[in-house]
View 1 (cartoon, rainbow, N blue to C red):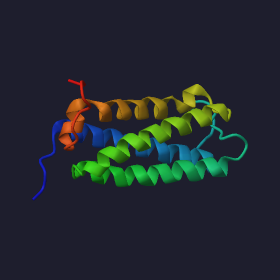
View 2: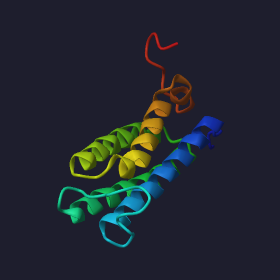
View 3: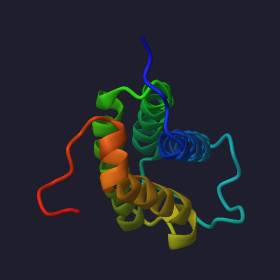
View 4: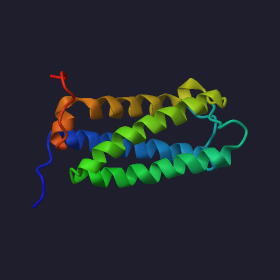
Length: 137
């Protein structure tokens, strides 16, 4: 017996798919397979881009797996979405410290911020069977 997928969960899955595409784009940039100086600005992970490419590649793979979990309204998907978006926000800030430009990191930071905020909304928590925090409503 499958759960009915609310519209908000579908939006969350689409946002996660977009985050996977952004992570793949960053991975290709760090591997040198995509132009470094494009419309988004300079993108570097300190002076060792291979490590950054590995981190972003792992994030892309996890986000692809996460889209499937969100699409099936798996409660663990909600937990992973919140945790992964927070991890990607930290990775984006570390990339900013590592001489990436704000313009290059803005898509990831904004998208992951939206995912985190959307995950923490009471309606989204209810859709995954999580009780909202006391006093949240």
